[in-house]
Image 1: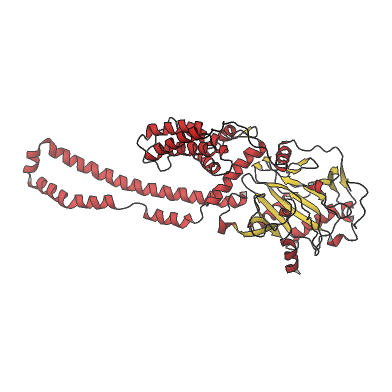
Image 2 (image 1 turned 135 degrees about the horizontal axis):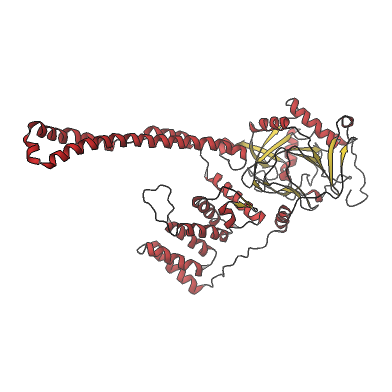
Length: 524
């Protein structure tokens, strides 16, 4: 039966929506997918601490060698200066003359060996042992995409991001020149390479009055930045802007054949082709992406309906009613407040941290990930322990529905600019085994300082993450047809760590609880 279920799903490809059915992939430790969640980045702090200590040990070894050298140099200089004051007198004494010959014959070859003796072999071995845990090129690309996503979705100015000002709030963390260059290099390789220009221009501005120390291992090469900036202009057909950049580079590299040849090529391009006028106007977004941006930038929803206590969904609620805020009737969306305690949240996150893997969608079986979602996730059985059973019971209390035949609970943690683009939770073609996803319960396990809202792009609801609250909505109309107005998205995290728990509720067990009824209006 499980095989049949898998085969049924393999050909589903609705909207951007079957991405709501996410599957865990390989463990992130094996693939190095650090930037996709805050929890997966935590080991990097300890890793960097070990690397810093290892480098400090290397510096200590160098300092120890320097101390030995300085001590012996001082002793040798005293003896040599005494000899230079009166060379004849010094050499007339047999012991002094003998000592000089002995030093030059025996000591100085040993100093040659000491100079050639490498320092830091143990530290190199330590580094090699840690190197396998370093972030990969894909990690860096994911991190760059996260920064760019924050800037693009929320319409932030690049200059503000450089300074650490995010969505109107100034933080005490800003971007270094190396950070900005990494994003610029990444953007220069994308289809919209023009977006790299302000990043590379900022790097150029910062390097303008700096001189490169040839012994500095992390120094940024000005000529490489100028070359990259010029190539970015050329790639976007802004030849007129590329030419002066190459001229500036040639002032430092007048005999560089590569720069000279490239300058000649640009001159030919200017003569043959019409240069594109550089402007700040970007191509229009896809309508769904534009809608996504608009909702994420809007203020949170203010319920025009009412708040109340839910006493009636299950008999238990007569004793312990739930605080309920009705956001909308069409679609039916409810926020339940204070439904998880701090200890329950800590327990859920603790369980999930041991099982985290990159989320993938069954909608694209030939790919390991779905680019519209950036997060790490874990699946928890409702029967795992008393905590998961209690959370499952709370889902029943909120929804009045049964969970038999539904997926396990999914816990998600988002990373740098973590998001989930507009999607729906129900499937266009109803699965025959468990039925479609009738409803969704989404628990917020953490507050998020900035960003991370859940937005219903059609219904125009926006719910900010609040620790311990839960969202509940029906995905299907009363006749069992999917409700397109439930299309929703997770806005990118700007600052914070967002944890959520999702429980989808399938139709199969609701046959007597919520039978299919004929729709009396478009909103039912």
